[in-house]
Amino acid sequence: MQLAITVLGHNRNYFVAEILSTIRDCKCSILEIRYTRLKQVDAAYLLIQGNWNQIAKFENLLDALQKRLEIQIQMLRPEHEPHEKEFLPYSLETLSVDRDNIIESVSSFLTMHGIEIEEVSGSSYQAPYIATSVFATKFIVLIPPEVRLLSLREEFLDFCDQLNIDAILEPIKR
Image (cartoon, rainbow, N blue to C red):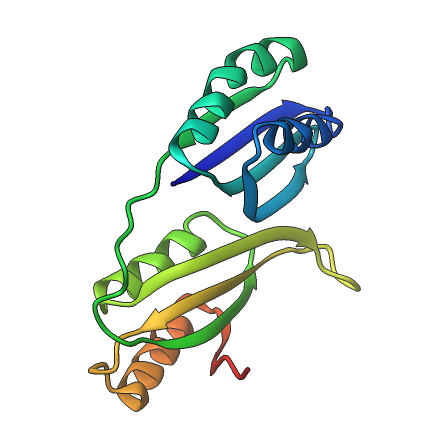
């Protein structure tokens, strides 16, 4: 059985150690973990695994942990849905002048074309040498095999040109 957990706290990066020790004490194992700081907010994302009573024991400890550490915890049991078909993994990176809805526009383009977004990250920063703020994104996407890659690439680059976005779409090589 698996459990996905998101944790948010105000500059309380020690909460990660507390949660990890609670996971260990409940005899669960970590399948995936991510931690990041967003200004004064720390965020952790975990996917853990255990049998039903280990997961239940962990879930029962979360409320006390949340109150003691003054953090917010959300959890969800993932559905086990294997991909029905094969996909081609691609990396997509964009760079543009920082303005509203760039990431929304790119995400909408991808979903309109049946492309699954596996992972996305983005950030705004001051560009060197100029007084302009830019926004950079990185997507990991899964392209269905029936999508014609040449047509998709051409249409996506036209889309980016219209919005003045510099983009790179390339296969992930492993």
